Image (cartoon, rainbow over all chains, first blue to last red; front, top):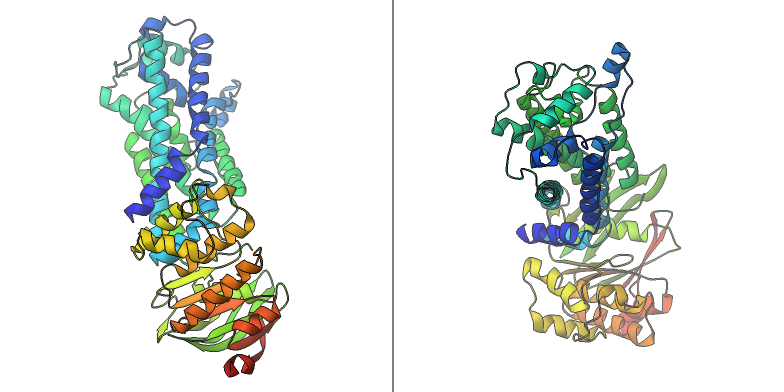
Amino acid sequence: MYKLILHDIKEGIIKNKRFIAVLLWFVTFSVYALLFPLYSINHKDITSFDLLLYFYKGEDPMFDAVLTGEPFEFPVFWMMNFILLLFVVMHYMYNDLNGFGIQYIVRIKKRITWWISKCIWCFCSCFIFFFICVLVAFAVTILIGGKTFDFTNSYSLMEKLANDMNYYSMKFWGDMEVSTGQVIMCELVVPFMVSWAVCQIQMTLTLFLKPTVSFIVNCAFILVSAYIQNYIPGLFISCGMSLHNINFVYEGFSTSYCVLGCFIAIFISFLIGAIKFKKYNFVEE
Amino acid sequence: MKIKINNINKRFKKHDVLNQISLDMESGNVYGFCGYNGCGKTMLMRAICGLLNLDSGSIIIDDKQMKKDFDFPENLGFLIENPAFLEDYSGFQNLEFLTGIKNMADDEKIRDTLIKVGLNPEDKRKYKKYSLGMKQRLGIAAAVIEEPELLILDEPTNALDTEGVRMVKNIIKEEKKKNTLVILACHDKIFLNEVSDVFIEIEYGKIKSIERNLQNEEV
């Protein structure tokens, strides 16, 4: 199986030119953030984790915004992170299944081996995506003379975010004490887990629908999660909004809830995919 | 090797692509499938390769049932529709990669097989630069390189010139001598007549007729 995994990493990641779009996206996002929303903050105070938080912070939920009468801000940048990742991984599995992959599957004799390999590839793709995200955050903070290796969030950024937040009561004004470990969990691990879960679901959906259709379905799922949070259990994607973590806001999700939800989603998705693939027809229907 | 197909059925979108097909085949014979486009030849080949999930019926190979005892036939070589390979690799590299899965062929064997199908093993061109005929030849090479016991060829003469067709004929005859069970589909009736031991005509997903090729037997 390791040969198949290496093959998938080579063909599906190293040769995947869409990762260049990921690099361009995070660079553009960083530049935009520094020039506009974060312009008022002294750039020397900005840490690499400030940028990571900004990439995945999200916005107030729409339902709650309506309740308070405040305008709903669509989490465009937050959604784009997930949509871009789905775009990167969208076609590889399907193309392999309808092309060279058949040669491989027939020779290895076990369908499940191919599926496991693809799931590992999915995890690796998400990892590389986040590696690029972190690399850009670090590189940009080095360039602006910020605090690159300070694994906390700056006072200036947290003050700005607390002022911008309409509904959630940010602990910043109260008793926020977030350790380095919690910062890493909220701003890196949880968004990564959510991204991985979303990609795994996309892969499983591709066994039922064509890649473009499953991409649209997944995007719709992400969109709904942006609108409706807290009230519908299982819409774990909204956990991917870092600022909605209980370490930052009183009404937030707990980190362990997020991580557990993602693991459950990944596992169920893997199982459904394995069962579906066992009966998959290698033919254009 | 003995293949026993027992009353298999498969339906796609209200259309019976395989309809109560039963068939017995054994090693050392060449079974030639013929029929119009869309009659079910390729579907039947896919079913035998293990690439289809049948609605009912069973395929038994050497007393083992497909999907129950195994997912794919042991030692299978196949060429179904347009062969797909890694585009950024040469023909040699593609075969090297495929044979590396089961380690059933070394570099010398790869070279010999490529020469046998009329390709140059030293050709560094990538697969995406190959002509249709070259792609077809590589597909045939991939099908035969690991000395399969079961060889399935769907329209192997597609895009081949006269020399290529002769090559395919020779390969089929060689495989038959090695006691391989060969299943092939072809629209070229003259070609089928020259290589097949048994003609199987398929119509609307059903077997219309099975005839031994007496001409081939006499030869």
